[in-house]
Length: 394
Ligand SMILES: *[C@@H]1O[C@H](CO)[C@@H](O)[C@H](O)[C@H]1NC(C)=O
Ligand SMILES: *[C@@H]1O[C@H](CO)[C@@H](O)[C@H](O)[C@H]1NC(C)=O
Ligand SMILES: *[C@@H]1O[C@H](CO)[C@@H](O)[C@H](O)[C@H]1NC(C)=O
Ligand SMILES: *[C@@H]1O[C@H](CO)[C@@H](O)[C@H](O)[C@H]1NC(C)=O
Ligand SMILES: *[C@@H]1O[C@H](CO)[C@@H](O)[C@H](O)[C@H]1NC(C)=O
Ligand SMILES: *[C@@H]1O[C@H](CO)[C@@H](O)[C@H](O)[C@H]1NC(C)=O
Ligand SMILES: *[C@@H]1O[C@H](CO)[C@@H](O)[C@H](O)[C@H]1NC(C)=O
Image (tube, rainbow, N blue to C red):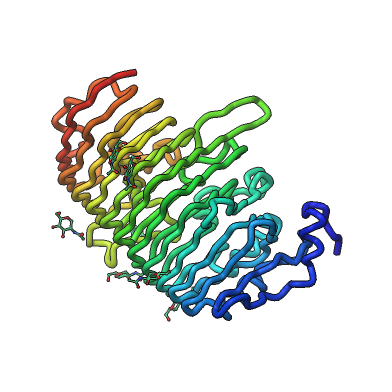
């Protein structure tokens, strides 16, 4: 075992306080062990067990934590998890997360989880540069969620933190979870591999969730390679089957392939209707004050596998497009991926869409579509849209 120079001497001196020590009544302060090669997750999980029931867990500002195994929030019941220091993912360990349902922060069967930085100094570093470049890379495996909120979790909030260079998915929200809140976050990624597609990196991917609010976020993805190529990659917000009552406000999304879009079929393993004959459904989503620079800002870009799709009440308003297509409706996304997929989809895609609205668009938006059959590719599609007050001012 090597001791590492990553950590400053002051931090290394704290190496003896490996175990969480209770500070005040029901408060656990967790010191990092001080060695990059030693996993800090056991001490953090220990603190969640000791102080998780209504208590506070503090990771102080001067500490660097190495993460080799998941942090399990199932013992957090109305607990306050304060990250002021820096959590650094040991990316070499990431593949072994397959046996833990893949996530790093696992929030399953949990009620009342608050994850935040009070001072704003907290950083969660996915350290994913080498992960983006791994050779054993296979698309459509669904990716690894960093924060996975699932199994009917509720009353979960994450705020005032910086998530940096996260491997594949920053937040995956599913499993009939509800009452989820995200605010004042920065999500950045540098050096994402150019072979990554829109469905390989997500800031937020959600399906079978309700009552989600997101406000005051800056998201920026950067793909860089040796050729100096910096094309947009990844998706800021994808709404899959079963998403309802979502509000997204004051968010910027830059250098992304997709902004905030209905994307049926991205979550793997799939979230699908209970029977193949019932429709997939997305309803009541509002995106307000959204600034986008990338390829596709808003609308629908979905995979297809035969089931009917129903969309009710999705509104994008006060959207500023700095770069990219302002609004799309593509029911047969990823057309080049298979030779039989695209013609089959174009023939059989079935959508019922009500109250899809694109209001108050600004920036490089051109004129809104005027085709009354916008989005309809065959006779099984009934798409009702509204485009209001688009002002191209750049
Ligand atoms: C959540 O609870 C359900 C039902 O008890 C269980 O099947 C599931 O494995 C739990 N999830 C996790 C990640 O522990
Ligand atoms: C939600 O969780 C927070 C702490 O995480 C707790 O303080 C609050 O009381 C919970 N709210 C409800 C309605 O249970
Ligand atoms: C979510 O709820 C729906 C409807 O009650 C149910 O069919 C589905 O199995 C649930 N999914 C999960 C992951 O709990
Ligand atoms: C969005 O930003 C505006 C201006 O800064 C602020 O007044 C408003 O409260 C914010 N909205 C939310 C939901 O935080
Ligand atoms: C969606 O919004 C409509 C109209 O405001 C409302 O009647 C309906 O109850 C909402 N559905 C859900 C699941 O929130
Ligand atoms: C959108 O931004 C404007 C201008 O900053 C602000 O007045 C308004 O409250 C914001 N809307 C929401 C829903 O926060
Ligand atoms: C769509 O895909 C899911 C997951 O593979 C499957 O369960 C479902 O039956 C499919 N629906 C149709 C209509 O093929």
